[in-house]
Length: 562
Image 1 (cartoon, helix red, strand yellow):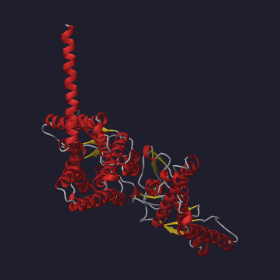
Image 2: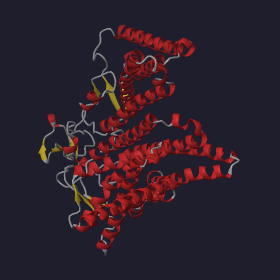
Image 3: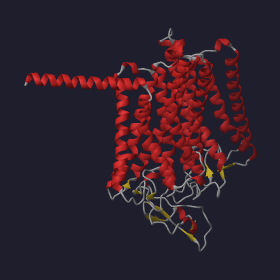
Image 4: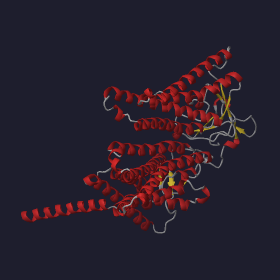
């Protein structure tokens, strides 16, 4: 099965609003009138809000974006519907159906989100009228609109690849006037109700009866005839595969080194790094929590980075350590899926958080007087929440698609954890299109924080260059140096993994780079920030001094008692 089925069956057939209409031109005229009225009214609404200063308020700003979504939404579906009604040619290509599917989900999801957020605007206007200009500032409105678009696009990115990767080997007639998900799934020759727990056979298409055709469907390990005797070519049966293709069986992790000569030494080194990483990050979080001098936006974001690092290293290393001690190096299908999701969520969250930390440094250096206002607690919480949401979107988009492929060959993953490229090598279908889409998604996720970092540090360098005070320059560089080091390490490894072509990759190199950003980086981050930061070092000495004093007091009390 080719991923997406586009090469064998390029076109679907849209049956339309009515499969057989006696008055097609009347229907065409009615739909055209509704379409033109919708376009004109939404465009007029946008124009009025733009040109009339009386309408430059949060409510109308959100309403203008709602009109824009409506305009794009109806333009995604109706023009194709009108063309089909006028020409009678109702075919739509696989790529066109995918694009329509994605845009429909994105715009519908964005409208759902925006309508919910518009109710918050009304609540503020009625219940907090005096604080309304502050609580619904232009910046907050932009965040609301961005969140709505992001929520909608997450829906599109999540459902489109999952839907379009099913084999559509039965009828190509979609009983609808556009490519809606339920109508599409009815054409699949696989069970779409529980694809992760189901055994899958590779279908390449329906053929005419002949000696090289078989009537077969393999599901849940049983051979059954296809409905109505559907004939499938023998070429779609991979005879070298296992007789059943269960995606619920265990995988086997080959580990960092396939056959280590000294597993005990590797275990000791990895366990030592793991212990130092967890301890250092937890100490960093504790110091920031107990020392009032560290209750600043920079250290609040740093505490979240330490939490991410702690959870991140705990996702992969404990299983790795267990495998080094045990002969059984298996990981269940659900365990592998969970590891992929958590790994993607946490690495994506760190990408975004490091980018937003660069913005924090920019405000501290370039706008020190406005820093308490621009980086208040509410903004910090939004930054942290945005980082977690951005990372989880990556996990929610890529995990279900990755784990929906049939893994019918070897179950041996040449890695020490379930990393997506290593897992996809076991699939018995072509995953090249999905890998390309995943590559584009990862590059986009890198570009957003890298752009923030580049712009922030460019402005910082310009500001530092214009400073007359050598002391001011020293403080500015001291403020940013730790973050630059962490960013360089983390994004350097991410660049190799996600941007370099496949020709540069080998399993050994991939595992070495993975060790760097899954094991070493979580250990180095808190050490860099603590060793190069006088405030953190001072807080650590203060806490250790308190502990020593309390121990001396307890020892004195015990000596007096006895």
